[in-house]
Image 1 (tube, helix red, strand yellow):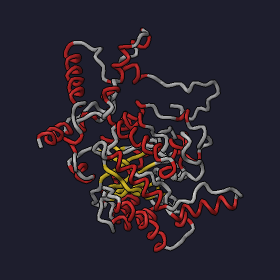
Image 2 (tube, rainbow, N blue to C red):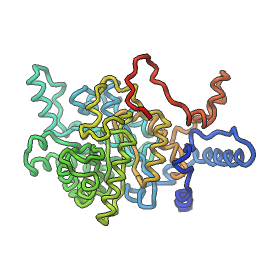
Image 3 (cartoon, rainbow, N blue to C red):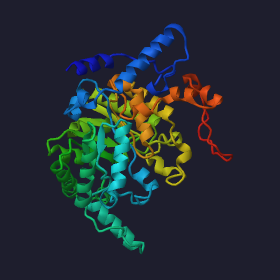
Image 4 (spheres, rainbow, N blue to C red):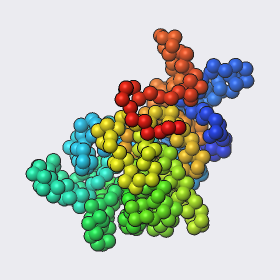
Length: 429
């Protein structure tokens, strides 16, 4: 109880305003003098003590809504299909998660990397894992004279994915989110009853396997998101739902504010955006969602899980980052730095977003950047903090030039290079 009270006090402490450099936990250094030196040293000592905080002492047994209710920050996980495709366990194009059943060690390892980085949620690796989507892929393969990669059912994959998520979640104090995603059936204009039955089959597995809450994501149409939420609410679990939209709204022209209101009225406890757009675009969209909820008199938690790439030139393109010429095999030059992510975490927190994570391209080190940036508000650092000294670590370099970089201002003022001669410049400011 005393630990929770301490956290409540810590969450009321505001950090550096967004107009100046944000002093993330992992970038704090001790190069200043006098009072500033002592203050920084005190913060560092506090954070060293935080390494000894047991997450079970802080949040053991608390539900998603309990963790959010007192102003807490919940950190989700990051990229799965994109990351596992790079590692050779997911097929590009279909982006389906049969690796949960075929290569469980690969999925388990990625879960563990996110847990160590600070994730509070192990989301089941069940993206696009409905019988409807699997049959759709089989039909495409047949039409292209290709053999389908597996004969698994969605239930088999979903069961395995749940077991993996729960196994790793229980190694820390993480929650398990049973995850739904869009169906080809919606675009094919099949009935609401058919679509909701597909969602229901997945939810039945998640609930049977003990998922702590249900999460719908990646919806391009507010109506399909509503249908998913209505189905998830049948199972008496907390419900979160995100859409893959930007500031212009969904594929049918529904504004971000109206999308948020419709999801909230359908029964979602947490609403927001995921995938397709970078943090800046996602936060602009979330601001519009927040305004819509406020105008409707609705109080709903907000969440953000953007892509780990810069996508500034598509800020009003409803197709998202798949419209970029580099998608999917040449996205690396657009990767966010961990400093980009720390700035995102701070701005999101100031906007009132309490559930923060990432989607495609968001690697474990990006999640660690969120956990480090908001460590003071959360009252703890990530489990891997002992090996994450940030700027301070550069002081121990053998090379003098590296030691000179052991200060916040250097990294704050750096304009990263693309590292190649032929670069297409898309941002002028």
